[in-house]
Length: 633
Ligand SMILES: *[C@@H]1O[C@H](CO)[C@@H](O)[C@H](O)[C@H]1NC(C)=O
Ligand SMILES: *[C@@H]1O[C@H](CO)[C@@H](O)[C@H](O)[C@H]1NC(C)=O
Ligand SMILES: *[C@@H]1O[C@H](CO)[C@@H](O)[C@H](O)[C@H]1NC(C)=O
Ligand SMILES: *[C@@H]1O[C@H](CO)[C@@H](O)[C@H](O)[C@H]1NC(C)=O
Image 1: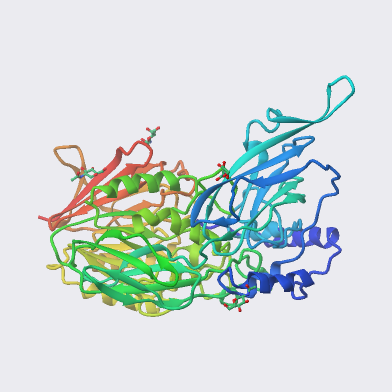
Image 2: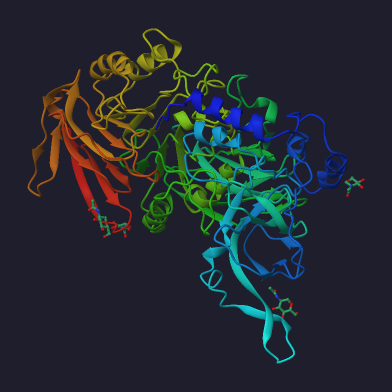
């Protein structure tokens, strides 16, 4: 979804900042301790000098309490690739609701109170209450999430009076952080003053990841429509090529890429978090294409190298070849991620965990062929470490099945960056991390549209965030693509992207986009149009130019059935209900809107040569709460 940015707000915050912070705003002059830490951290993190720009010494609260401690309940100072770390604060004289603990990475980041940061959060669409620090604290949680804290249930007597009565009593609390390997070292910091006026009480020593180069988060996508080539993309702190070994002794060397803070976009008027305090070094992104596979078959792979270590051996399934008989796929938009612990993170999509869990269940028995995530992928929006949180969450799905994506506003948009819509929704990413993490079979950089065939379906995947006006490059491409489909090979044509053409949620449709696209869809007999962006589920009649040209009929099971043997117009469905807070509908509903549901879930689709069957699955109950068929007989 779009969140109009208010420049008034920036002004307001710059104003507050100006009058509360006497410091110079120079970030180029580094404190000596920062300069020193560049060397210190170089070998243990994926190297980048950019992020150290944000590092300065931390500012202590004036607090003379001699008992205060923060401890991590670990015997080792090394962290594994994924673990739960329990952090205990003790010796607290007066537990307060405002006490909180942050996981800071890299250690020694600048965690000064930074009210102007508010505008950085707001412009990405995240309006939740977050720590306003000069460097994004990765994760933060209130100590009171341990219910024993405020009531001081875990107490200790520090001093007895002469009668043996306790004179000084302190309290403690324990909280847990879910920590994944982000390569840069981590420290836990105990703050007073809430998220708005933080000052530091105590910090732990830094913890390093035991293997910052570990190969992680391998995820698959279709390289072409043959079903015999699959692309694997993964992350490591090491820039040297690694390999994927698969099948019976085959292997491919990885291509290595990365992006730097300089590759992020920004504007002098509205600085972006990606180029500033949301930056986190992405390490290196490795990608390799496994060729010589068979379609609709199970193989296994592992990736890495002897130098950095290897992933587990993972079983995966290739999709059916384009033109074959059947395809079962899952499709949804706007999923994002949520923490597994009690933390606040920059941007949380509350439905994502439930939807991912349900899809993992669904794919377990090996009947699903592929997955399509149509825009608003991770919602990292300039807080780059959150891409890796997302990749970690989807790993049980994307490491086993082709995970295809379309670009959304939260991956691409930034004013002045060549995006079609002038807003700040990508937080300064401008599609660079998206394209690096999810390389799709596109023709060129920043032209993220493509076509792919799986089973009896031709998917035309567009970018609603790039120009698609009459005769634009993308417009020409989609016209040509759809006109060239052999419908005897792939009888079904699904047109998909991020922003919808028909929605009953107010203010969500760009009518100029619709008026350009509607005629092409009709001319090419598109069967089904799937979009996200609006965070709910909605299904239309067979529609073109805002007119219902045909209505579905109920089959013997009461399921709405659209007869495309007698084609009139495409059916549109919005499937943006996979994670982002669910959105309501306008009370004024047009007659083309047949079904509207506000619930988290995903769509399961089964295509055979004669029928396309779609089911909206409620991710909480796993029940089907809407279904429809399109037939061709
Ligand atoms: C970093 O690695 C280089 C080469 O491997 C080594 O010479 C250097 O001492 C290391 N620096 C630190 C701070 O460990
Ligand atoms: C740390 O080591 C001690 C002594 O070996 C052991 O009792 C304790 O369980 C260990 N704690 C953790 C968190 O591993
Ligand atoms: C696989 O699981 C799905 C959902 O959990 C279920 O609907 C389907 O019947 C199962 N298929 C088989 C072949 O077990
Ligand atoms: C989805 O499932 C949950 C849990 O059973 C239920 O409370 C909710 O009403 C369902 N939603 C819809 C739209 O049926």
